[in-house]
Image 1: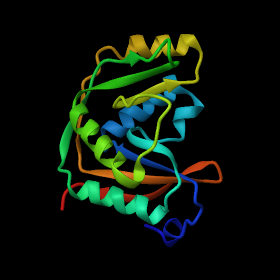
Image 2: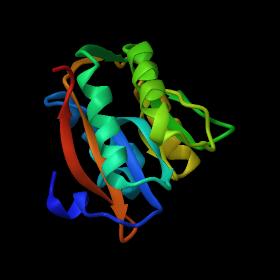
Image 3: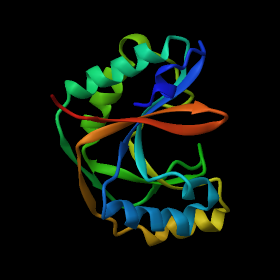
Image 4: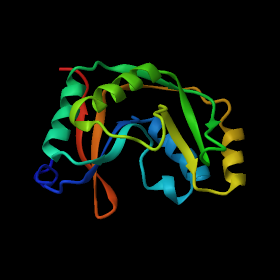
Length: 178
């Protein structure tokens, strides 16, 4: 992790912990996100969010908790399935986890125990977003086109992000297990 991220002293910051998608699946998902998701998804690598939110504790405490949870976790397989939608609650088309969801839930709960505890606007639902904040026709096209999805990958690590200047900033990749 860079010294700059370690030195964050703002008592209010936003932390994100995600599962990165490895190649070659990342390129496939990136192309689907580019085709259906527009500008909001193009600049962000495909990922599965474990936690994201504002915290009043110290950055060092938060990052230490993420490392601790990652060390206590083992690698696992994720299988992404046919597209689904959060509509009408939210205009999002996503790929659900046909395998690995229970492990994501366990990581999510472990991360929220202790100093990372916070409230969220939405209930946690492990998924990979394909399209959001786009026209209804684009959402429908993504939903229809991605009904045959069956992508698998091994989860070996999580990534830690913070927000500064309104942008997500990569801080650290943390390997699962000891």
